[in-house]
Length: 155
Image (cartoon, rainbow, N blue to C red; front, side, top):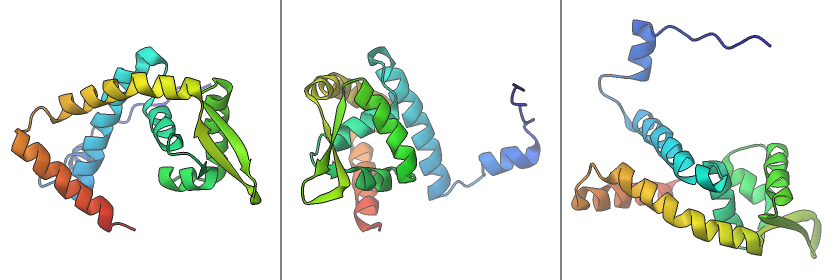
């Protein structure tokens, strides 16, 4: 299998990836890339990745459909099936048919998933705190409040 070729960092590519005046989308992307790397590192000792953590978090809400989870992740429902299969094999999630609509499968955390999430949550919180540590407490509150407002007004 051929190896991926590294793309040389041309001035045009650098300007695209590091704009002089980054806007919301660029900043959000860079922050998320850093956050995902930090979260993956924090969760690695538990055998988890960031997407596993978020699946466990959502499944902990109870009676969430596969389709709703796929929508939340922004992926095709058929792609979600493989992710859920792997977590179900590990014993962290379980699926069951909605008794009122057999076409719908609910996803929930198992007891093992609950225990794992309880161990993962403080690691995730510490990773988040480390990422935000460069900001003063006032700026952290201001940033999170602004982001929550954006989240609440989207869709």
